[in-house]
Amino acid sequence: MIHNPSVARKAQEQLDAVLGQQRLPNHDDRDSLPYIDAIFREDMRWRPPVPLGIPHVSAEDDIYQGFFIRQGSIVIANVRAMAHDAEKYPDPEKFKPERFLDESGHLTEDEMAYTFGFGRRICPGRYVADATVWLAIAAILTTFDIGPGVDEAGNAVAVADDDYTDGVIVHPKPFRSSLTPRPSKALRFLEDSL
Ligand code: HEM
Image 1 (cartoon, rainbow, N blue to C red):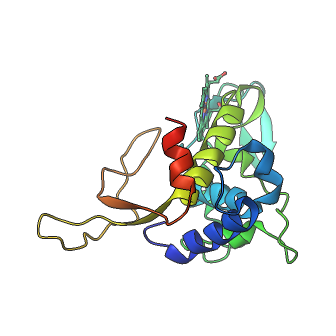
Image 2 (cartoon, helix red, strand yellow):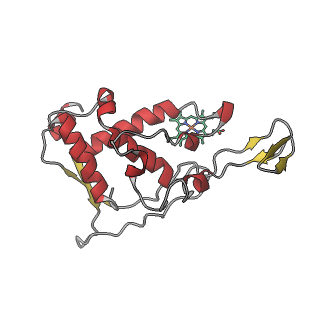
């Protein structure tokens, strides 16, 4: 959101229209807030948390696109490459939630399910992740404006958009940011719920 303030503004317009700046979002609002889902999907696409998935083993000999895969081979799915396929996702480095919405503003079929893995061992926690991350995005954008942090002298600190940890699971390295309460009653609802 620090790099894409227009995305945050667009989400807040939809949140304000649905919630009337009177309450926090909840799961019953999900169908009315497709842009939040589009942000979640674009999050998963832009920087997949498990960019190479978890290695699988082929249970039997197989042929995939002309390649012979012997039984017992370790198969690694390059999720990051799939999520940055420019034919499927034009301009893939750009953070663009709109790519998951059709002309009428409805969500497309692409739920970015492959970022949770494949087959029988697909992530069993995907429903928990889906519900909690969606609600976190919606609640934070309802109550706060997100911006760059400042250093000791009060100057805005630039944040790299690709400074991530290495490993099986990746996440952004610590960075400074600022959360400014939005001028709405939603913040009071947040305080009341603590
Ligand atoms: C955005 C959040 C998450 C992502 C991107 C994610 C992704 C993945 C991926 C790619 C796998 C490997 C699937 C495969 O073998 O193909 C996996 C496995 C797994 N995940 Fe998640 N996960 C997330 C959240 C969670 C949560 C919240 C839980 C628990 C509540 C969870 C529990 C597990 C478990 C137990 C496995 C191992 C399943 C098995 O090998 O049978 N995950 N996850």
